[in-house]
Length: 161
Image 1 (cartoon, rainbow, N blue to C red):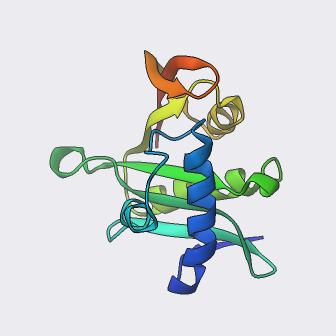
Image 2: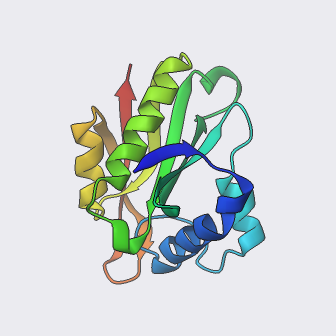
């Protein structure tokens, strides 16, 4: 598996992952009825951000986007989001994407990386982020409408470099 910058030819596979993850409604606070055009606008980052894919044998297994968390006075802190194809989860794809994002942010001189909305029931992601140096800074109770669990918390997570 290799992590590289996204190219236009990757979009159909990236869209399939984004569409499926968003429609599952379990991990991202995006509209489940998001269109392909809306997804492209949200997911494909413009500089200084970047979007990457994890690929193996020509197949996109996962994707990540990263950039400044906020503009202006908050632009020294980065953020990132990750999505992995359902049949590729639990195989290190998310870990590779997370390591790539952290490396990119540190090499670009960011002071840290902040995740604004990690669904508390997404324990595999929470544990992955903690293994990579993130801490839960707080939890907004009942901030996420989960399709089966109801309203659950969103973690704010941070990794200072």
